[in-house]
Image (tube, rainbow, N blue to C red):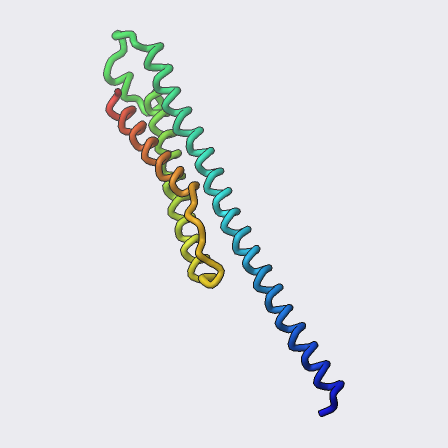
Length: 149
């Protein structure tokens, strides 16, 4: 082997090592961006579901205040399209949507964590905790409207 050949082999080895480091950095950044995108998506679901839950509860309380009149029969209060029925649908839709979004979020995080374990450890997400709390509060609101509280 000639000395020039050894020098070019060393350059190639250095270039390949540098290339691998760059690829690892890029992959790590891509994984981080994907995790942050999952967090943003879940927070968008939290925002949408919170709007549905709070609007449904507000409709129920507003019409409950307006119709505190005792002249309504129980049959009038049990209609599906009554304010209470609309509130139950909206609150239920918000809770179900957020629960499904949270389950999907956790599945995707687990798949990502398993596939790219070497780029971890991954941070715990506040988005998951917020989604769980909002789901619980929405469920409490649903039960309150269902029980006419």
